[in-house]
Image: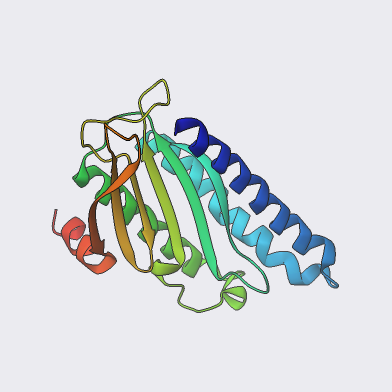
Length: 181
């Protein structure tokens, strides 16, 4: 399973790279693609801060950049055991921080699909792995991500090695829990 995750992750990274570069190749006016550079100028320092502050490694970036900035995707790995509380806190803090940075960046605003940019359009995932890159199979959180305005938490089933759902909660519920801490 670990090799399947790594292979699919590599394919995803190449697909994202192709989509971003293909859009640049077919653009008729260089000014139309400035928003991709603006997004990079926001995402790259954000990623560096998250890696340092939260002890994460970024393994992929992307989003929906067809005609504007409609979504941002960032994937991280944390080489430690994950708890529900840490997963929730990381997810909410990073999404809120990136959303605020996107909305505060005046040059990207005209290119946002919707302003103010919504938290639900930022998909950050955090995989919790052992130092040897294998999954924990003790019921702890091995993956948290946002989809359809919900946070989804998964664990690895020790018998099958497949991911199983631990919890699904609305982003608003998670936000309230984190802000209440």
